[in-house]
Image 1 (cartoon, rainbow, N blue to C red):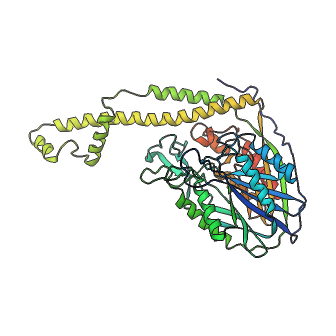
Image 2: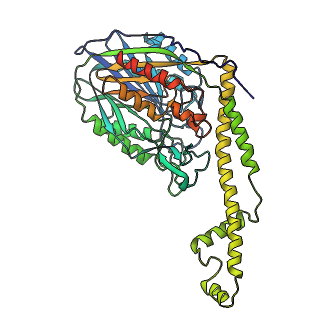
Image 3: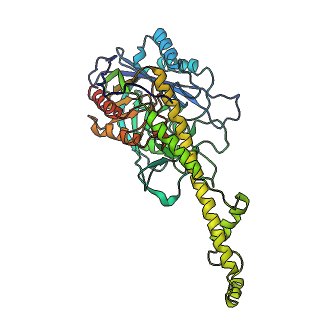
Length: 504
């Protein structure tokens, strides 16, 4: 058993590594250029739709900001993008274009598509092409609204626990579910037009896991790939639409576990794209030259999961020992369930046989039904225990993995990089993990300006970042279990994120 020692309350001190660009007054000129490069792996099975590295470079000729959006699952740690990716891309761009590494923001859409092995080189290419495409721009910000494509995947149970909707395990019985969590339907939008009023780029921020998949089963950028395609095709072939993933840690696409229809992300992407376009068309751009970039490092507390692991292992043993032998097996259980659901009064034969036995003062049929029902109840109880075990086993593996990571780190804190930037009246702050939706909603509520937005999955990856309240449920849902952070981290981060936004 792993256990972190000497875990006493400590004062966490924020360590700052700050790159603050000189703010530019409104009315001065901004330049921007955008580009995209295909990063689809085409030699590893069928391809449904392409993956891209999209890049946007914005400058006032003193300060330069790079926003890069990748159709990948994460920037390092998991998936196909290696840990050295971020340093390599930033280092090369700094060397070739003299853009400070701290001014380069790379966001993963979190789609589960397969990119090429040289995605780093192609990302560098996209940024360089964007820098070569610089033109004077007018900027504007606004919002869109979309509430049809996403749902909170956490289910609050009547016993006070929370379970999440995953393919890794079965859902609980419907009768045990009390309520569901919130979503964030807001689409944050930054629009940049050239001097002719034509869109150069659209940056749009939205919170949802792009994990619906393609009906063909082929490699896909998922619904955010389709939404970007819709935006680009409607605004013109020279427009680049950069999706920036928000606080989607506990947000699934709708009907995620549907077994009656093919998994198809395209309709969801079309809806998100059209809703974004509706917001884009309401934005009036202006010669707002404000550009500011901040980069800070923040230390957050690491979790000690040893006690919770021990509790779950004890529960695991209890559940296994609660399984009981039954007379039925799957072959006999399923036909009985169908029969007894079709007609609970006369399940085993036609009604006339039951009525005949009743006249003869016999109860053979009803007695058989009583035995069958008892056997079905026992078999069903075993199934429900098995489903609990699958959920527990999946999350216990995550806890053990992260406890080992936290012990190996040799530190009671983890350092994260936060970027904040302003382009005109558009403000954004970032985080390198899967923030759950309530955190994004909290930050937006406290932000100094309405057009302030939050991006997770940026410049690294530290797994899920749930609320302190959700961390009370450790072991019950993936967000709580696939996490290295300790309770108390949320307030530290939210306070710093709002402070960054206020400083822009």
